[in-house]
Length: 224
Image 1 (cartoon, rainbow, N blue to C red):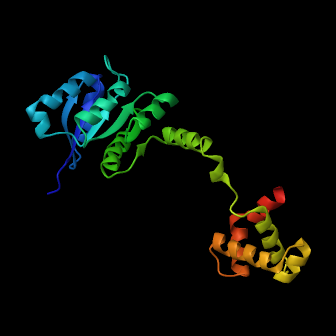
Image 2 (cartoon, rainbow, N blue to C red):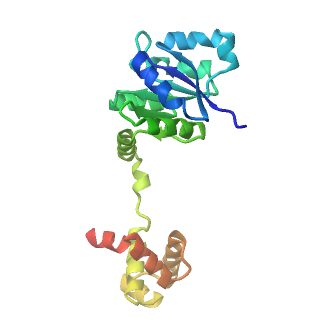
């Protein structure tokens, strides 16, 4: 029989702890093995023989805790329970909280507004190596990632000269005619064509032209 996912719940609100307990109780593959109202008590439990014997696989961690906050305690949880995945479960959708939690190694970030089914699935996702993110949080992380992408990653697939050569190929010109029109050598055109095939991963001109249309390269060229 497959071993259940052992969950430690760190949440200061008794009513919400009870809600999570009731939600997870029917799940045959998930079991709450410990629960605490503060991060300090949860961390001290690592010295308890019973806790060590049934150490958690997943830690459901609230951020807004009395005493040490969930964010401040996150690194200590990684040290105390190095094999456990930390899944943040909080009301905070502040961007700095989200980014800080991810930076500190949280495997997921769910809001308490998430459905109980989503929370249950989130536990299974992180234990299987995935990242469980609230849709609102995921969109923010994606925006933040895109905004911080290095400019080199936005480099065009084909160079300006390669696009000129490909455009002339699409117009039906052969290599010699392209060389004359661009006032460059035949061998230079041949090299550009070879690079175009390699970058588009296509074996010949018709296939490369088709791929460029699919990727919208000609539309981008026309906008420039």
